[in-house]
Image (cartoon, rainbow, N blue to C red; front, top):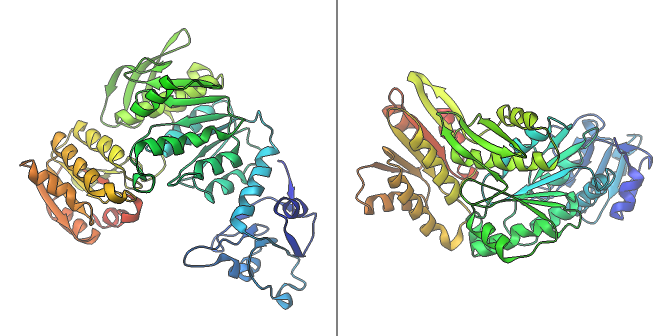
Length: 461
């Protein structure tokens, strides 16, 4: 483990030591007093509805040995004889980024860091890549969806004895990927695709591409891995000369890593792939074409890191998916629920509906909610989802949410025979499902995380 001391933090952040030991070694960082552990380093984060800096006393009560704080008056009588170090900085979030960058640099430029971004599939691609390279390395990866200016630094600060790092990078405005890249200093960058997520903030897919390409701002990057079937990424590659190696994967367009003879099963996929001079057979333990793409990406990264073909095969076959992403659940009477409710964009909903159609079952029921952060594009993109519902011959459509009404509207316009319902709340949806569920139904739950579709799942009996 590469150590960081209180003194290091003071120098990195231009902080002021209020009290404590400058030589104390800072290992575990935490921002949540509810889960803080003895000897942790507490970072006070000021949010929209609360100020974590004011909770420093609670953090100390629970065992924090160092507190990094901003804009808070310290009760000197409270900290007396507490054996705690308190550092005041101008901005704890910026300080967090600086400390994480310092920590990453302690591991050297050649330390394998894979950064994953894209409109759709970041988390699942990250999971598969981490599983593949863990066949050779001790891997630290982003947990859940901690992919922003707070989550990514906390991930990096967990580095101890690991020998590789896989981080997810999310964004909804220009400049955010550049900021994260500057902290993580990846040597392998991945862009899964350019879709419509956050188009309400960025205005166009071309601007989304521009924002994602900020991942190349690090001079440390040696390889860029891209989905060559994505129209904008493929076009960008043809039109721009690159100083770094661009590694491509695809199903349709000619690329270095390609899937052939794809076979889709109920809960898995199989395909062939030429890697080096060897033809390998891949089994993906999750169904759907998008997971074939994610696996191809992981193969490309594994190849870059010189991981043996048989180890790549094992890494894909045994990877575990982050919860709420294509979770296959069974409830009464052999009813299957596909819980894909962590996030949603037009592109990901389209893929999920396509996968729902491919499954065997009694009736295909799509429960869809609002796709958020679409701005002026919300109506258009929800209407496009309506087209996909019809194209995939879904039996029953159930929606909830202000914008999701446009899905129903489009289905009605197309004079579809699909049974088509809209509800005002998740409880109403769950109550209706409990009334109509039949043996061997297949139900898709898909919406942006803010729609809280977990409430539906918890109330299906």
